[in-house]
Image (cartoon, rainbow, N blue to C red):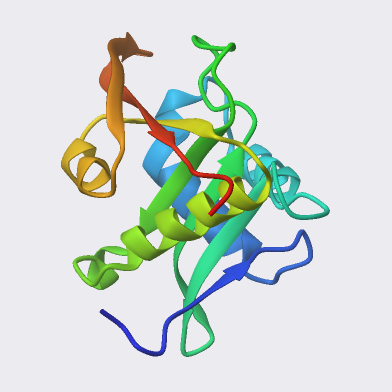
Length: 161
């Protein structure tokens, strides 16, 4: 665990947006037909939202530098438009992994969901099911999404807590 790590809400004016958008594009651009670095940056700006709730984006900061990110978005999988909202874009720089940062980012988004009165939300992942199960997420569905086997997971949140 990192003591000096801070999870902060991203704003559309953040100087870190281009770097974070580049991480996201490199990691998941293949899942979005026609996505470019510029279109990912534009989408990330929209994910920042104008207030709390959906959409929201968060960044893990250490020493003034971003080391990870996570978002809360209305839609993250066009194959399942009825499911909403979604935990999305959970990413931690490789050299910062294994320190609990992803868990802290997920918990921050869960707190945002609870504060918004939402009681259920979703994510999809090709390979991080064990992490999310440890955090209380449950398998919802397994499917092939754009050529990749993924698991949709769901999380019930106590909005009264």
